[in-house]
Length: 228
Length: 385
Image: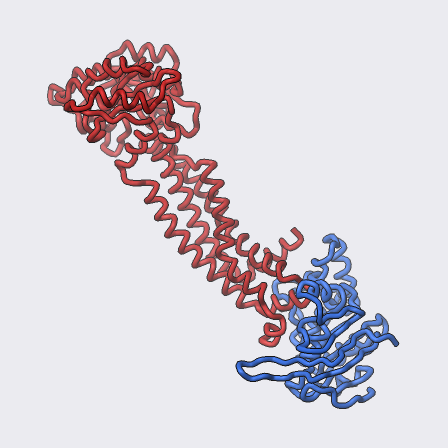
């Protein structure tokens, strides 16, 4: 299988006052296209930093990050913005929907960056909502939805522009077991039936079981490889 | 335009706060409209001044009269085509609150000097032939419901009559108008001859002279020539353009333009603090939402434009409402106060300047929050939640 994302010798160092904190240390990682990878590890181990680097939200202090043939570490901020809008979808622990917009309008947001007309944007948002099983909640505001429904809307928003890569940061961290399983099943469907490559950060071993493979991150290094 | 709905929704996320901010903007621009109209009323005379007319007043003060004999000497000054005079009467109609400008003048000469004033010829003729005749501006006539033929008594506050009385009676012989919407007609004119004959003191004097420059003559040279011939006399003169005269006249009430500017300056400074604080608070409250927008691929400049547009939108809503209400109020005031404050008018220039002010204030109030949003680090903002 082709490699979609690749990190080579990646280090990420933060300066906290006079203290130098190395979050990732010369890390190498290849993620094949169509993979569903779970990243586990204790708090502060560098999982989210790794996810941020893969999503072009952050840049490595050294080393290279490439996704789909694009060398992210050498891109400018505006190039990264454009790249993110077409190549990657993000799913957050706390959903991060915009409270002033309906579910449909939240899902439409990434499409505002395209040249699509209003009707086409609505149509695509409705398709994305139907994929996550919320076609009937299009006009609801986030405050009118349950946590699980909010996360489904967030997933619809992440896939509406049809990115190849989905990055999920603790997507079930705020949900009960049953709802979490529904969300994870949905991610699995997106991976298996829609061919999305998924990288998911989680603390939850049961959630990690939905992935094809699990990697443990600790003190900025990949520690062990476990096949799910 | 595709972002408008999003910007609109964001602007109204805190309805009470946004409404209060819009109210403060509304009040500021309502004040702007009113004060601009008042400022305009005091300076409109200057705006309407004719560059071919000069005004001759006493060098020391406008309130000092000039000898009536100066008229013929001014008329023979090189470069002078025609001359007439006017004086300040200062009376009121029925009630001391009903004060309006009243000028004793030479009827035909005055209308020849001011061709922008329109009066039917037969009314001018009737007035010229009636020694106690009076003509009123159409705003003034409408204000008091006067009709031609009405007997109009004025109570003098300065000019008592030779018999000791203060009541001057006139016959309304005509109503004049002007086509210029900026020009007020809230004043009246009557015969200087009647005024001169009946007044108890000040005989042989006039308030000021108005002269028309002959074609091709240099106004500065004409003004100097007039003033030179009265130099070292008991009544030295100061000849200036009509605009300078009107400005000096309005400054008797104080420097209106400065007062208006100072008040508006204070109002808009406060407005900037209020709306700037609203926008700063609004951005602080949704740091994580702005970070999400950036995560989704919204470029920094788009995020900046969204926040800035929101600030300008709030300012536009309040500003346009304020100007609209202000315009209505000014129209109302003009119809009721037109007689006392002619030229009360929200000029297109003032409205245009207000639009510029709205955009500038919106930009000023929103620029720092917008820059903060633009510079936002996604990783830091998301980590803060």
